[in-house]
Image (cartoon, rainbow, N blue to C red; front, side):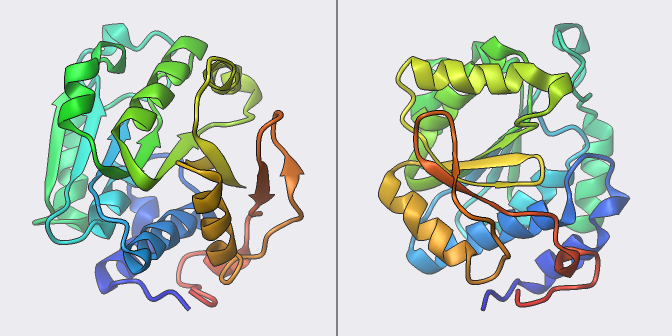
Length: 247
């Protein structure tokens, strides 16, 4: 059974107070995966590309351990570069939400277009154990951000890719296919509402699936492109506000 720290439990109940798109089931999956990483000795900081008002970023910041931090990368006020209008980072709203839900946590921010994050950035930020990708939703940006994530992850690190299989954001699926077609090495773990989770090897994917199955109802394995199998984690009433089920 996974036990969350009190600040994480409180935020899972109150996350609707932060504008954004993150289901309760998926937030529980993220919190569980980060706790599983801690239990397995996977050490490293977290990062999100595309923080909007911080709904998911706050959860990452609350789940990192002492000595780790959370890095948020966003265009913020450079919205002229938001080519597909997928969200709108607001640094003022983000700061207010952090103060309300995660005051004193160890966070950093970088105002940048992720297409401009090159080798120097990746070398400086190596060792991440959790990366959320929720920036631009075009094919090129999604593939770019997956390569960045692969470059900065530690062994056993996890990527959460947003808006997978959304008709209105088909560039995400196309970008994922392009990433795989060009040799991307990340391995799918599972799909939760609106998120695909990937990790650094088949062995780690199997480990995380087995751990998730202890706390979540999952469907039978499904084909995913021509790579690995994934488990489908459906929306679950146990993960509504105030209902923690086995977690």
